[in-house]
Image 1 (cartoon, rainbow, N blue to C red):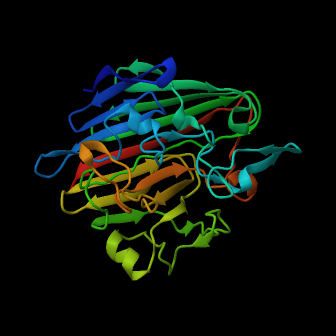
Image 2 (image 1 turned 135 degrees about the vertical axis):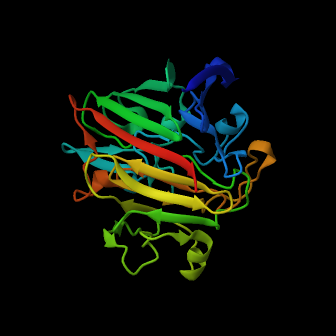
Length: 341
């Protein structure tokens, strides 16, 4: 059984609308999602002692989400991740997007899908958000109708993304939740044990644009067997991960990653239909944002597993196809499965 309750979360400035919060609860999970950016604001899971903790970084009030902050819990689009120099060419026409991350365009631009109000519809086991991204929004071609659905099934949070375009456009949607399996507000994720089911990854240049597809074998990126994050970063003298791992290509549901926190016994397993996952260890968090319950979020205090198409795919023809054509449907699903070991 899943219960869904609806409440006001806050009002946008200048009468721009009311943001609502939807609380989804099953016997194992409690998830709060707001209609601003389809943002997951809380996710409560019990540990092996039966004590519930909130595992996602974020804010208790709407104001927190309206300030400059690193996409906590939000859906990002029209194109998640980076597009080199914020430009691409389609049918001979060059499109220029906002440059908002070094020399590149990141996560849909200045006002991406994370910074808009979505229209909610309550379902029996979750909530569906929808919006129409107008032709030319943030520089992207064509109107895009988008639906993002969150449902609960026992210990599993399921996110489905669908989209339809009026003209050919790149589309790549993901959720940017930052997790800490010890509980949000815990100082770091060094005691988390990480596995990612990927034989190849994408090395990046100094602006974080992929340069090639490389085997993980014999590198710091071989996470096919569990590694303890803190020790691993130390051993390889790494600042952290912010890389796309390439998953076996097919539109079927497949295992992607597993994170285990021995202290609490909590386990997160991720399954997806997407061809890639960006593993990000919160390298740019710097402790300046004040989160829930007064938590400060220093570097490496949360991790993201952003299931996605590969970064800059619109400019790299050998990457999985990222273009959505009229008459087609973009349809991807990611499963976040929580348990205790």
